[in-house]
Length: 324
Image 1: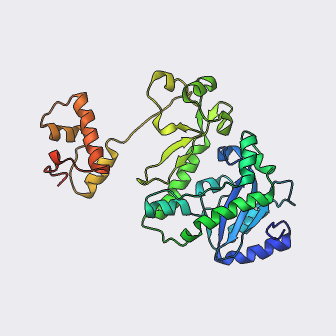
Image 2 (image 1 turned 90 degrees about the vertical axis):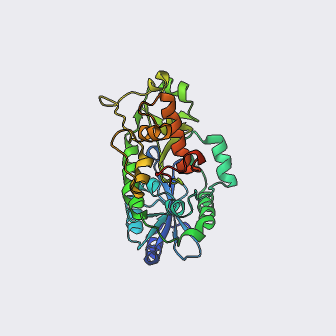
């Protein structure tokens, strides 16, 4: 089939089209598994401006598989790479030049780029074999190709978006940092963790008593979240039972947090001075016009602050300098 590239002659022809750049979609062994626990089955490549895409088999029984190093050479020779998820791409190919179109979209429109990989064949195999770590190796190449084509057609209109200020930092530095953070995972006590957190399917991201997490950079606030397999790792309950599920892989767990991070960023922008003591407590002292603040008043002050930042400034306090 013309869209399956598995001969050197065809690879060279495809490589010659890279002068305009490629859209690249990675096909791992299982879409549900954490990318660190997968390997590369194939790569969908669509020359930018081209009329159709191609699929290059790397580890699939239907294809005359191409060595991964040769595929990397082809991709790296392109003038430009556009992909749906650069952090995921890095698990398979170290292509720093890649542009994360989902990240770009979220920074422009402040919402997530929506698309679906589903088709009837994928639905059939995943309904039956989603817990098999190499399910994509038994799905016909033609159906994997159709899935990638479907995604491309749904996001094609966004491929020429112009990067806003700050995009390069998130696309390169931030993406690499969170990619590296994910590598080590979190040590767990397997039975206790599954009991307390009820992951959708432990095989998706747990191996050798380590659970692997995934940072999501595509948020309206640009503040990364960290959730995978139905577990929110950025909001672990503070109960002793939940904390006991985790075990340090070295010596200690260390947790740190910025004090009033949102407040300090905003106050820096409007030249409103906040002392190095607690930002929320300082504003609570202003709100309640008192020096000693109770826990209840501190909690209420935080609610006022976040409501003002993400909702509407309360009329009761609108006259204060910080809100003025």
